[in-house]
Image 1: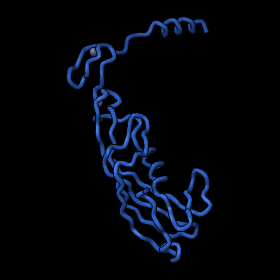
Image 2 (image 1 turned 120 degrees about the vertical axis):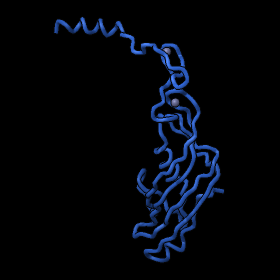
Image 3 (image 1 turned 60 degrees about the vertical axis):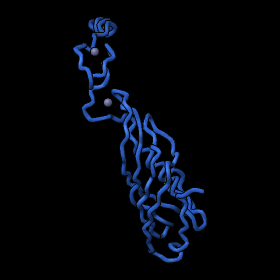
Image 4 (image 1 turned 90 degrees about the vertical axis):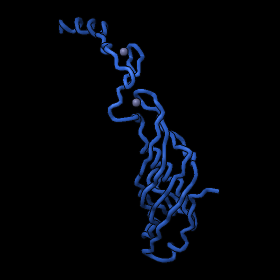
Length: 167
Ligand SMILES: [Zn+2]
Ligand SMILES: [Zn+2]
C-alpha cells in the first residue's frame, strides 16, 4: 500500500477548497542519484492540497535524510534535506509537466520522487572545505596534510603547445 496516495474527493466537490496534509512514509526506496541515496529514515511531507480549475495543486515541503559518500574524501555522510514541491494533478496530465488525477485520487509518490531525486546533490561534500584525498600519495588530507604537488605538468600539453607555436 502506497502511503502517499491521497483521496481528494472532498476537494473536487468544493471549488477553491484546500486541505493541509501531513504524511510520513518509511524509507521510501525512491532510488538514488549520483552517489546520494535516501536513508532508512522517514520521508515527511508537509503540503497543502488545493483545488484549482484544472485539478489539484500540491505545494509544500518534503523533509528527509540522505546518505552518500563525500565526493572528495569518500567518507560516509548523512544529511537532512528540505525540498520544496509544487505540482499540478489534472485529469489529462501533460507528459513530464503535470501529474495524473486518477478519478478522485492522487499519488504523491510520483512528484516526490521526481523532486527529491533532482534535489539531492550529485557531488556531496562532508564539509565545505573538505581537503580530499591527495591524488599523488593517497593520503586523506583532512587527517594527514601532505606536501605533494598534485598538479604535475602533463608532457602531452607541452607537445601540443609546441605544435601550435607556428600557427
Ligand atoms: Zn570529505
Ligand atoms: Zn600527498
